[in-house]
Length: 173
Image (cartoon, rainbow, N blue to C red):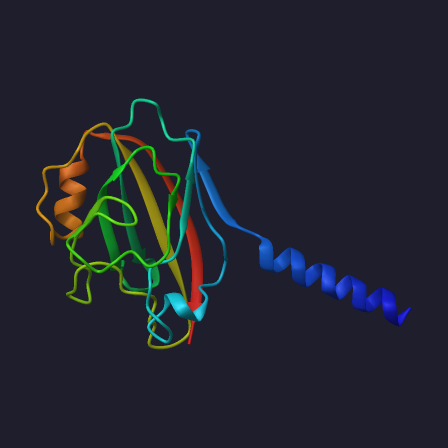
């Protein structure tokens, strides 16, 4: 009996740890390899951007954009990035905090609400916060200068969004 309980606990742990947070919309699928941010993607760790998996991008797409924010903190912006080529299916972790990125993917980044370029990880003052990563599939290349704000990105995307999907994950300190 004890062996059965241990096996069941191990199976539950494996299932829980390999589960992906995912949301689909209009054929677009966006996923993270976690439901709770591992420390390395937060201000308490290495503060590097997480990997984001993208599938089902429209054949009409030219580029993609990502906005990560915290709805629990009045939509505090953690990351904005655009002009990601439409054929990219994985945004790898640790995108450099540079205005224009050419490796490991091509992209342009804006300023987050920490007042810096690139990714700024979850850093809630207290309690559990949910973080929203939105992927926008666009029919155009955006002529938006590096270091632009979320509002400027949202305005530039108007009329160009082909698909949109959201994935959420949480973090608590």
